[in-house]
Amino acid sequence: MNDFTPLARAAELARSFLDTLPARPVRESGSLADLRRALALPLADAGVPPVQVIDELARAADPGIVAMAGPRYFGFVIGGSLPVATAADWLTAAWDQNAGLYVDSPAAAIVEDVAAGWLLDLFGLPQTASVGFVTGGQMANFTCLAAARHAVLDRAGWDVEERGLQGAPTVNVVVGEEAHATIFASLRFLGLGAATARRVATDAQGRMRADALREVLAKISGPTIVCAQAGNVNTGAFDPLEEIASLARARDAWLHVDGAFGLWAAASPAHRHLTTGVAAADSWASDGHKWLNVPYDSGFAIVKDPAVHRAAMSIGAAYLVAGDAARRDALDWVPELSRRARGFPVYAALRFLGRRGVAELVARCCTLARRIAERLAAAPGVAILNDVVLNQVLVRFGDSDDVTRAVIERVQEDGTCWLAGTTWHGKGAMRVSVCNWSTTAGDIDRSADAILAASRAESPRPRGRPGP
Ligand SMILES: Cc1ncc(COP(=O)(O)O)c(C=O)c1O
Image (cartoon, rainbow, N blue to C red; front, side, top):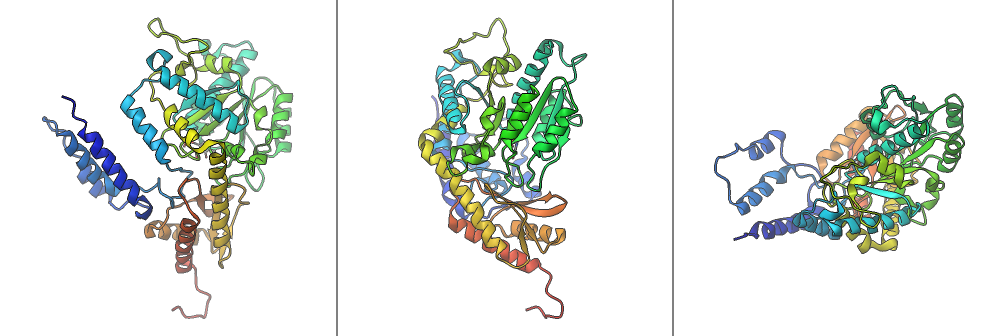
């Protein structure tokens, strides 16, 4: 007989984890050695009863679970998960659909089709574009650049899918100095090489300079891909997409936009202006697991011309039952064959939020980012290094790399909130990224207090004045 008690137990454990999540210290509590001791069990000959497995896993993993889904995790660019999205993800696991082919899961295929339309609407992109539900920004960039590689070589009379790159015309890839690391990883995976990309100078906020792009494009000929960015991972700044799009069009270049989190600005009337010109690109990468607050892993590879997208991704075999125009086969749009039906949580999150809810989520995070920037900037010895146009804030303490590093370590140790560091134009900085649905003004103020306490503890005292 089927025993579903582990599911009920997991739901109970998840419930109590989520209940206590806002109060947990925002860091791990166990050392590497402790965690290994608790988790690295020998594989026994005899199995263990399922509820015991779940109970012991939850207990042993707990000290190594970071409260990144909680309201005061501001490291990297990490969203949480809306309860409705987590619930849909549980159903996704229970249904265990292989979402590669329509025939395997008509529901998964239709839900992806519908969610794709909603995403295109929110991002202000053509409804005719194709959308692949990939694992994240990395694979979204990869998929879009595979489509770009196909298109520019096809125009040069070269079939890259059949012939590969050996003997192919050279593909020029042009990126901003501040392109995200995953653009370079994608170029590596695609055989285009990371180091061959021509880097265009950026301005103080990390935006590609259109005048510098014009100069670079004037010096090259042949198949060309331009990679622009909507939302710099450090500053949140947007490349001047309208100007870049018109320069790329004049050169018949493919324009790709990495909008892992920044593309969501298009969904907020107050921030949409940052994305002006974005619809003129040929492909776009974005994420669900960041700002949409769906569980990992979830990203979107969007291509204006579905024929190009399909040509770069699709696979066929005699045993694979192909769909048709009305029956979506996900394998046409993503690098995988068998895959998780990750459209369900996206569909659930978008249905729950609606157009207004998405706009409010984006706008709220941006308001909270400005709030923490203002709180921190008001303190002596604290400087905000970027224009806070979106949800990203760069903070420097005591105008010193050492002090900044020490403040970050102290904040991480304290556990009120979690943030990490970066180097921005040669200066060490703390990065604050606000993209969790549950973060409140109270969380921001508590976090600002903790950061400022760490800053005071680490700041060199003015000479001649005794300490307390
Ligand atoms: C601009 C940008 N592109 C790509 C990525 C990579 O996204 P993912 O971590 O989902 O692969 C990130 C991650 O922060 C990003 O900020």
